[in-house]
Length: 143
Image (tube, rainbow, N blue to C red; front, side):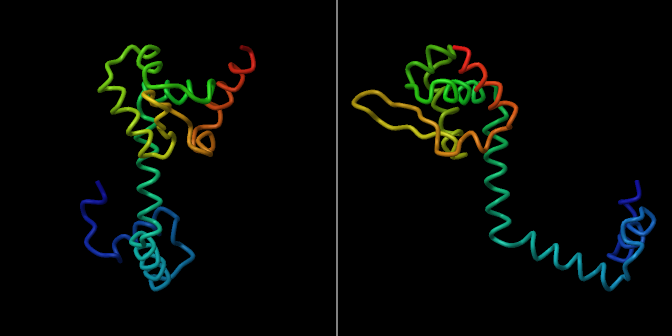
């Protein structure tokens, strides 16, 4: 593989020329672009955005969590005991999934007496794939 032989930035530049990526730029311009990209990748704003995206990706990577989000898109609120019954999973597993969704800022849990209500965070649907939300909105309208 070509990347095993890369020793310097000049080597990378040569590869990008061969690939047609950098043919219009000098090495100095290429080096400046690479340095800007490195600085950008090290900024706190970028790190924060990446962390949010990783949390969201993790939250959406489970069928159970997608089912919880589906229920909330259709019903707008539910309680933990109802989720437990609907999903057929033990309470500790449900708590784990709910906590991941909370960390991703997709849902919130509020106590109402002895009951814990699960509600969507404001803008939850904006953070979900559009076709996923639209398919559930159609289902909601049919009911």
